[in-house]
Amino acid sequence: MVRVPNVTRADVAQAARNPLAYIAERWTPTERTVQRAVLASLVMTCVIVVTGGAVRLTGSGLGCPTWPKCTDESLTATSEMGFHGVVEFGNRMLTYVLCAAVGWAIIAARSQKPWRRSLTRYGWAQFWLVMGNAVLGGIVVLVGLNPYTVAAHFLLSTALIAVATAMWQRTREGDAEPRPLVGKAVAQLVWVLTGVTALLIAVGTVVTGAGPHAGDSSDVPRMNVGAVGLDWEGVTKLHAVLAWIVVTLTFALWFVLKAVDAPPGPLARTRDLFFVLLAQGGVGYVQYFTDLPEVLVATHMLGSCLVWIATLRVVLSLRERPQPTADVPTQVDDSQLSPV
Image 1 (cartoon, rainbow, N blue to C red):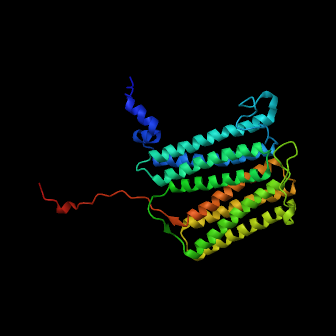
Image 2 (cartoon, helix red, strand yellow):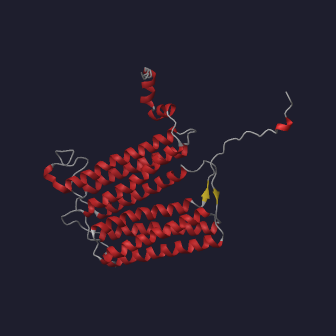
Image 3 (cartoon, rainbow, N blue to C red):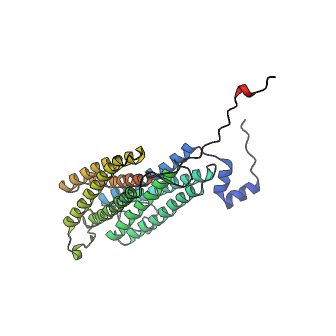
């Protein structure tokens, strides 16, 4: 028979006061478990970005016309709401899956021995970003899919991806002070690349907000970019120019890293970014010349997440934090031992 542990009132009180500490006292995850938990939160963040795009692309943005309920009378979608209600409500339910993934990452990081406070803080930063984006998603619905709030909703998800990527990287590093692997000039080039990539993503939200996919079957006002002398075609071309600048900077960075004989880590991450950019650019041009088919637009949204992750991995590869090494017992020379 399996012995049931004796749970006292003190245990219940402790679990109620600080459940994370209670779990951490009784469970020690392996390093691989922590890494997988954090990776799950990163993957789930990308999934919900794509499914959020699917809500817009299927015209289901107001499938649930209110928030936090789906309708004034019902918490869930009803049969009368049809396909659009199912899509919108399904995306809302995925938020709970994302919360579970982030919560699992927090629990795993808190329970790791020794406890790495910095890693746990990354997890809580993800949690509050998810909560903030959930509230912002509700505002998006309440204001009738205003394109500016939709853009903010996507950009906050981009910030969430950045935190999740940094946390994932930290699970494979120690807590020592970071040691740079490249010179200051190379690091500055990478930061310029990162800034232009962030601008590329931001302009991409303007392309979306001014484009034809409004997110609802009825007429939804699009972003008014005419005030700055640009129409949708002009914003799209600006987006393409920024994309080529990012590709050029990435190509230049790879040559610079080769010239300074940089370690293999930064070179590999830069190469990965270059190939992701080429694939993303190919999808972008095809969708532009084929009048924005929904499948390609969704693929392009996934590509945006992958470009951002690949860019951040280049930044994080420029330094290292060595893992702590276990003390190795001193070898004793047998010849020095006294005979028995």
